[in-house]
Length: 404
Image 1 (cartoon, rainbow, N blue to C red):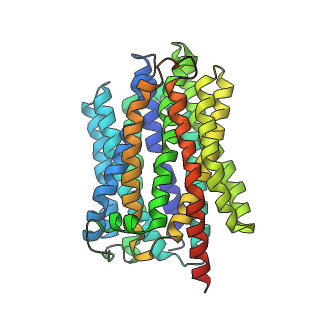
Image 2: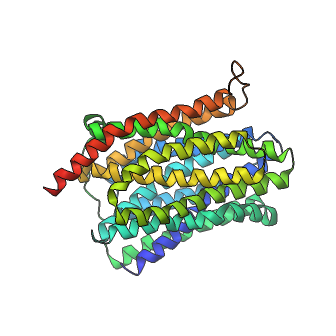
Image 3: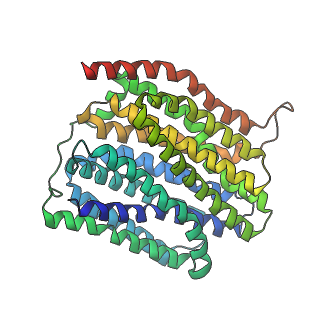
């Protein structure tokens, strides 16, 4: 298994660039017909809805099919989706949003399935090292993905890019075939708690998980506001220049991932020395994300916009890490997969609704001469700071109970 894990990490990292490549490619192409960036702003909500959909139906597949069957089936479905778009699709926003929705749904199930399977193969002592490095590894690939997408689109065109993405998904089948040949139990069906509403019941009945989910929902207002508004803000600075739009958009996305990596390296060192500082991550993350979203709304210089992307990426790492560590500590191990799926379904579906409103909110004029509605909308995420204290109390209590 030690030989297969590096192959899995490399090919998983390679396939993780596909959504970024597609969104950048679609955004640049849409700019040719819509220089406001509003059409491109609807691409991100489509992916969020796909992840939310995966949370609703993922449990069905995890309960009834083996890891190998889900892995191979998901990757083949994603490949066929891209091939169909390359053959029959034109420059149509609807077909592209549907494709992003389908891929997000399919690959979210595959990703959860793959991580769950790998987790069963790795010893408890090695898990923190594996998952921490795995997340940073994925972000390293995604730093280069936007720039790669821009250049590939200019050199080989959109259809060839779609074919290349299909080939990447085919390569992702290799680790599953190796696991099957090595007989690591990839074809065994993992036992899962029965009941479609297992995850919903666990969240509702667990005060800590309910508060964390509420915290995620409120904080996601600013989180999704930034990513959805980014194409519009970039287009505003580009002023109709396609080259500036493509370059600034791709560099801004790269800076988000770079901020995630820088913050991740520092954060990992801090948590290794002082694990309880994860509570500080909770307090800082909403402030970073809200500041990045508001400053980005007002800036008119490309360098300043890229700086907000870096700040946003740092806040995103703090947010995701705090949620992951505290959320797992408050969840029963046998119900963790269901809680993750349902939590993502609720949060991403909410984010889809918020994201769909952003293109309307961002163009509205200031109210009463004070501030635009978009700014007030983003500031609502600071309400999540009031939810942190009860969550940390429950978390610290759980740590005391686990050491008894």
